[in-house]
Length: 318
Image 1 (cartoon, rainbow, N blue to C red):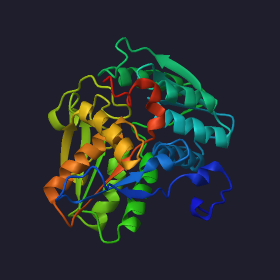
Image 2: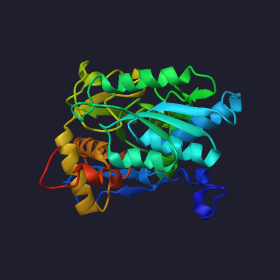
Image 3: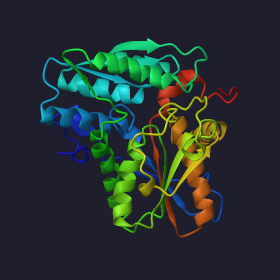
Image 4: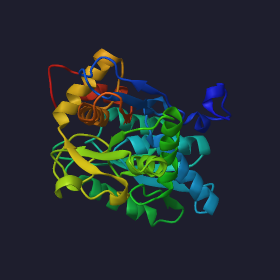
């Protein structure tokens, strides 16, 4: 059963089958068509619901995760929120290692789903090169304890099963084909999952991996500080496969933030900062490809998660 029939047996069945929307008001003349797949239609407002579900369910199938165990993960919020949601539905306890560098809305969401939230403090309040490795290290220590199951999103390939479904949905939504797809990379599960499907259908489809230009680890080989949650993890993404993408681009964070406000005001799309970067890149591709071509990207999560942080405050940049 899927949510298109309007009746679900539980909230996990509400994951997926998200719509795509064409951009109509922010594209310059003479561009390719740009479509945004609205992943904030998932239950926690993020595409991370897809991977959280498959990581938990594949572990259950193997007998590695059993009733009474505690799931543990390191996350800036969206993965943590999604895992907290899945664990709540399935009845598992959940321990999350996060940081004050991430949106308070996300931390509160994890808490609302019943997670035990542990904070690694960031002095600057931003995502430094060593913050996520510190969070991972702490979660690894918990994962060694009896009755804990570490989902280990940074190396768990079960996540790709959920993300490939995004590619399958896009293929159905665009039977005429997609000329280019772009997406920002954290562990790179989403972009690689989609690329796997689209490249199998048409090897000529171009795939562009995106990252903050102040932390261009993939494109230039060094990490730096930024404030785009969920991407730019400070090391080469574990799932990144050079055979599955054509180019890696660093995108200006300030341009991405400005794009978030434009998307809301001119297209009615309320999304977070990584989505802003995605659309900046998609429009760049659309200008290059020209009329008659199709560019697709994703709205990674809902902008509602960023209201306290100033993303939509026109008077400030953070």
